[in-house]
Amino acid sequence: MSRRGLLGASLGSAGAAVLGLSGCGAGNGSASAGTDHLSIWYWQGALTDKLLATAKRSVPGVPGLKVKGSPIAGDYKAKLRTSMAARAHVPDLACVNSGVSEFFPDEQEFLDLRDLGVGAIEDQYLEWKWKAATTPSGRVIGFPLDAGPTALFYRRDLFDKAGLPTEPDEVAQATSTWEKYLRVGRTLKERAPGKPYLVSQISYVFRMVLYQSPKQFVDADDRFIGDQEHVKHAWDVAVETYRQGLSARVLDSTPDYNAAMSRGRVATLINAVWAINGLKQVAPKTSGNWRLTGMPAGPTNYGGSYVGITRYCRDPEGAFAFLKWMLGPENQLKSYQEMALFPTTPAAYSRPAMRKPDRFFGGQIPVDVFGPAAEKAPVTFSSPYEATANTPVFQELTNVETLGKNPDRAWRDAMNAAESALSQRGVS
Image 1 (cartoon, rainbow, N blue to C red):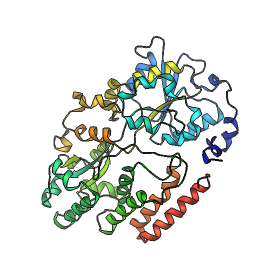
Image 2 (cartoon, rainbow, N blue to C red):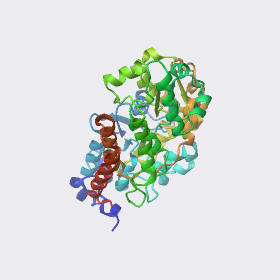
Image 3 (cartoon, one colour):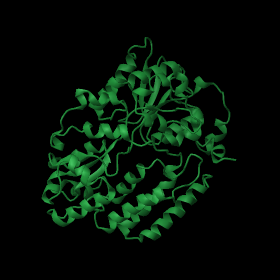
Image 4 (cartoon, rainbow, N blue to C red):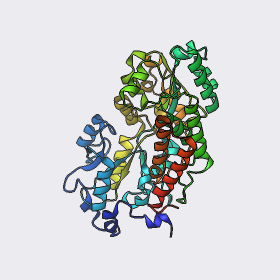
């Protein structure tokens, strides 16, 4: 019997038996039952207040349709799973984070958007976003909300002082492979004042190299492939970054990280578009020194969300009409302006509102880098069990970097821990 069959009701042991009782009063589970609104759950920052305020009054173009947003505090995913397992207070629509595949074993909890006509509009959105929200059985359970295209952020002033190329196109050529990127790191360390590090921590190197691969830790047949070359290559590049002393070894959201970024101790970041605001907050005095260019070895995506229509939705056609309005190109542009949610609709990338020069990046227009990255990001298969498999690997990378653990021993321990954790969930 396949692992998917064994885990088909994996919303939790408490809910598994309940979910086995299909076809019970779909409307009874809705949080908005008995009201004139459809309900949508989201975490703070996932949807814009302005658009939600409009939808609460009336969804434009859909007479009589109202949608009320409910921000969920705390562990959003756990609360959504709990409500679904209990079939109580389930919203009509629900935001789902980038780990949409975690809901694949429970795909019947969401409606298939193909049945509601998504095929007529899918070419308006990034193709890989639809594929990432498509279950192995072929059901589309997530409507693209935002994306997380990646880039190389670099300190132009530090590159200049090290005698390195400084213009985005030149830097892209000088860092076109991970080997060249590390070579640039060595030059920065040797020649730039203060001997800046290339990266803040090696986990970002591992993540970005791995995300450039179409394969991750578990394949479509629910088999562990985390010990294969595509993962080992990412590990080796990250470890080599550590061995060459190119990492500042500071963790995000810590005083040490903030100090490193603000004082020029880290010369580059390899991260997603959403990292821009965080960088501006922790290092405001570095404004004008940063530039953006393409990632070493090509673009990828890190983050981005979806909205699903639950099987308890009392008006699926109305809910789908709401999504087409809320997440259409015009409103994705508004979401970008209000909350910096990067659109999944490429038509928005050429709009004047997205083409404003950014003084923090020396007058560069960020979408000129992130737009092509979003459109060229690889189609990556992510299984429902990626977090189970990759958590031990990230932990062992931290052990290498902060505790000096032998990298070969750390790799073996990571693989053993990942396989053990997966086996407890039925993965071979």
